[in-house]
Image 1 (cartoon, protein in one colour):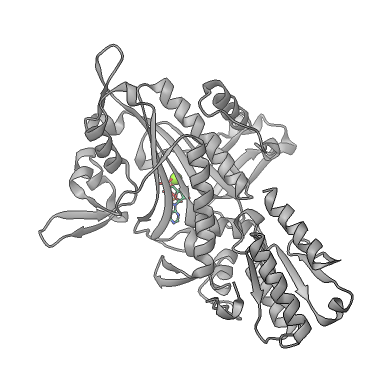
Image 2 (tube, rainbow, N blue to C red; image 1 turned 30 degrees about the horizontal axis):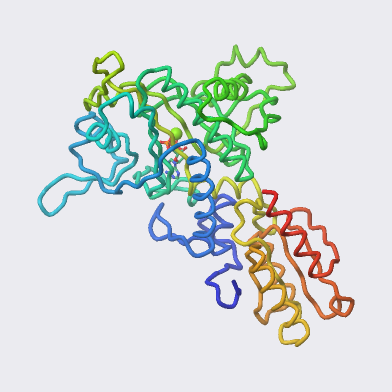
Length: 445
Ligand code: ATP
Ligand code: MG
């Protein structure tokens, strides 16, 4: 992409209405614009990052054996009356009446709709276990929408639902989700700690939240520092192997890690003092097992091998895809702007032309732009007639992990400069070597 042709409305000043750094930077970097309180338009660069996160989520869900699908945003109130949640959900639910006077709602989550799909289509244990998921917009009329996409009213969520014949199989689904979520966050370049949590209105007992540590997080968290050392890395996981999933679950849930809702000071005090960590975190996902709560009220049953009819065991799982972008920026930025992890960066490299209009420099930049595009590095070429300082400031603000700077002086010796956004360190290289290095970095992700 050429910056001269890209819609990237960068703001020079700090927007006064943004209280936290990720909100400020998303506005300044031209990623989002507020449409109404808690409702945002995703401008091209914000949309590009959102799509990258969605892709990672899809890849990891499909790898775990889950089925992607898509449900509507508008749902019938009658289904929610069946489960009893239509009244319970309260003011967070946006309720609408259609022209025929039928009550509808903009889905805040989808347990009822998916249970309805399940009960109308599945009869036998032979079709289980089954996990269905989607990535779809949700609406919750939050009392205090704030912090930009972090607590919006309309937000993008991956929501998944597992159906199992009994509790043992449902717990395997729970563990499998734990593993797939750990992988998902790691691939996004993030550390999200699973913490024992409270189940709230969804109901049920087994639930973990995934938290990214950040001072601006809304949750208070307590954990054993040892949990920070755990990595899945490039371990190959057989998602159908119950023992393997359970072992990873145990590994990640053994060290103490809880939110304030479930915090137990006595247990916490048993951890060696130097490992007792207290901080704040952003909830970027949650998994639940809630048994037969919905299947009983909504009559979703299957025939067992023994030929009896039993209510199915269910769980649900969510990743806050749009909130995740805020969390990534909270965890990865400096005074000059965003620092994207390579896995989710909107562009792989920024090309800065130091002397736009100079024939030799323009030609070199065009060549770099073409070859990096062909190599799949996805460059953003700053071809505007701006001063070098302004170009650097824009690149730093939007936070691409790598920058190639091209100027007449370097070109005389056949070199360009490759700079890391994170370390600020530069190397002088031939254009070919700079590209080779980037190809390797992105191939290794
Ligand atoms: P919170 O406690 O932050 O209100 P929640 O526990 O009600 O969230 P879930 O029902 O667990 O939310 O939804 C799954 C994920 O969706 C959350 O972990 C979070 O990352 C994201 N999410 C929930 N509410 C919002 C919101 N208002 N704006 C953006 N993302 C949200
Ligand atoms: Mg939650």
